[in-house]
Length: 441
Image (cartoon, rainbow, N blue to C red):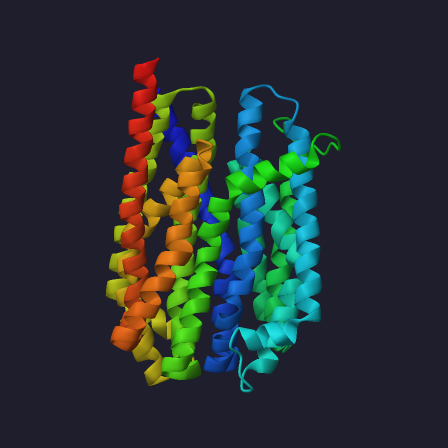
């Protein structure tokens, strides 16, 4: 039994990690081409706007992960509610995306100013923001559909859709920015085309024999949406945390080091986005398996999968830390086309200190989604909220006041370490509660 579970875990986690790497390349490709074509000002403008992308993407993950988790439970119970749950989740995501589009297009100038864009980079920021916002419905629906396809036994197709989208983004980035000379608008347009291609690829699942969900109206709309939101909020916070960290750090660094410091943080943040995406891929690849075993009340298998995921997260965290420590100069040089010495110095030092947080971040992300898979929303919410908002905000403000830029880089490891302590406490309490329940029976 354990050998079969291990093979299934390796397949689901591996494919989903590859897919999330592809998803993270959406922004990474923009970062590379913008830094190469438009220098540190373009890089600073992009870095100020990544929180907007994180918000849009987080909404897709929230609705997709929450809805797909309950969908797995409905499938195990042979419930006919799964089709209406899927339909209502997609409709909600599309409407939310349209709302984001309207806000982003109508208020792009005040939003760019609020995020810290000064006169030097304001035009580039507005151009990128308006285009990304217009594509919001596609980003959100792509995230939802990908989660459902993955949970419906087609992780290969989910991964393929992500890789096709990211591959197209890279190609279109080059075409739009170099031969066509479309600047920031071209970079944003290339990124916006990626989820459209992803959705078209995922639609293949509707014509496959193993498809078990379809569009069907009816059923309790608000109840279904509530289920998706409740179970998906931890995933939302996990994803949005990258944007919140960026937002907080951008404001602090702007005061300490100006646009050059923000550009340097852009380098560190983009490496971090890839690492966090891999951790998220591991967690999301584990989630449908845990949900399936939990629905079947197979507690031994649930704990085995949890141990596998935690071990994998710890190993990946060590690998990311070592790579950042050993290859920081080479990684920084990729995004420093102008060979700015100040930018390089900030980025190299920041990358090495920031990377300490990878040792614990993966464990926290996996644990949050593990609780979600067991329909334990509150512990998952507490872990995600601690690492994504409260801890990072507190440590960044405190450490920046004490140690300037060094404190900024150390805030992320401190927040993840604090969250790990909370994760251990919540896991211990959950096991104790479960043990007492079994003894009472």
